[in-house]
Image (cartoon, rainbow, N blue to C red; front, side):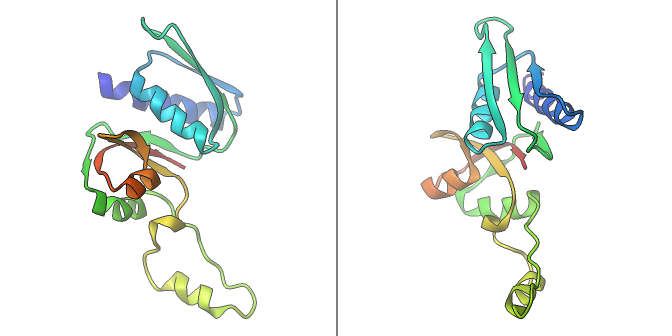
Length: 153
């Protein structure tokens, strides 16, 4: 039940965004959920969120911004080593498509060449580490691995 709380909350936010709502109400809540939302806020995917009565069942009101395309929580919490983070993000997140504009054939050949690095992808993978809940860029920078909570883009 505990791992579905995050997944249900993220799906509620995606559905509210698709319907064009300005706010989403999430209930019940967890500390992992507030950490996930803080990372989304830091990267500009949501405007703000407020936690009401965190010691009981609680409720979170999220102000949406219209930037979330998809957002999911993994219920099995896959272990991920620091060296495998870039490969995982390349597989899970959508990549930016490079186009050949004008005389620049190098961009076109780079787009055809194969898998793009994780830095050329949209979105973030959220990982719980010994250093706290981090996005994949911070985890690579701090060279720590952990368990994947979910991703958003």
